[in-house]
Image 1 (tube, rainbow, N blue to C red):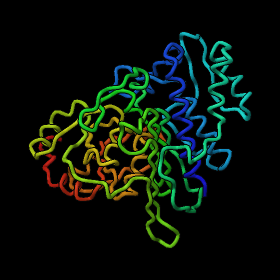
Image 2 (image 1 turned 30 degrees about the vertical axis):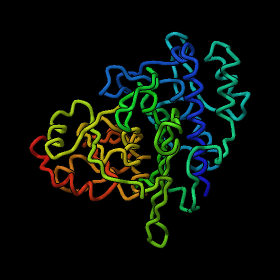
Image 3 (image 1 turned 90 degrees about the vertical axis):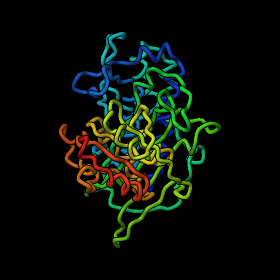
Image 4 (image 1 turned 180 degrees about the vertical axis):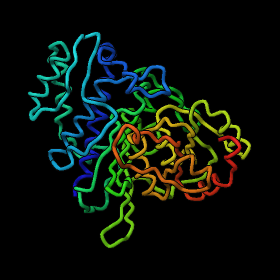
Length: 364
């Protein structure tokens, strides 16, 4: 089955589009709109949507739909495919066309007939990206499953606010507090049992000379037909060492105080995808968030990768009860897209055991 390969390739095409649009700041600022109150994340006073978000999401749908038509209508994302710019005074439905020329023609209208930019983007959308040209470890195993039982969550640009603001911040230790380094492309696959099984995280602004790991990280975790658990990943678990650093959400004063009392150092950064990737790569021990500010598109891909290396994501509410309620993906409705009971992401079961020893009821 080529689904993993296609999703890795699509994530790289997404990264290419994100970089291309960001290279022209004047053009980029014209292609940003503020989300409606219904769409916006309550954490942010302003929450933005860019053409990159919409175009990437539709591109993944198109790429997957060509190879696996029965999955096309089971691909969900943070964004809808309508893009309106008050500066351009027009709204368009963004859909990838069958040919590069047709896609270019559609985009040209959005760019006020700027055919050069439209052609550049259409070229990236329809480009065939070879796996060996992607900075990742190759999938080492093929696997098969019933594709009719699969669905996909996409966050085309996680950390959109950082993507809009731009800039490269200096690292604090091995972690970036904000900026383009915190931007990720998230593609997660889950099955009819609500289990995340495939995850891809691509960092469009990764620098192999200064950053840790690989630009594109992936993991697979699923139950085979004979009942055995199959795990494989691009992440080397052997490199993991405890460091007693935990990512926390913003404005988590009580959580920070309690963790520090237990001898942990806490860190804050932007982008749920980046924080979860830091857990995957062992840059932090865990990510603890008590607030309902992450969504299925944020957690599906990272959770699949964490599962593939022995970790997972549970609800913060269940940690308080010293139980493990894993994040599940089902009933695609407005009510269930939000991880309303908070999240605790961990890379190692011993880390979770240690966190469960803490009396969380005193603050939650």
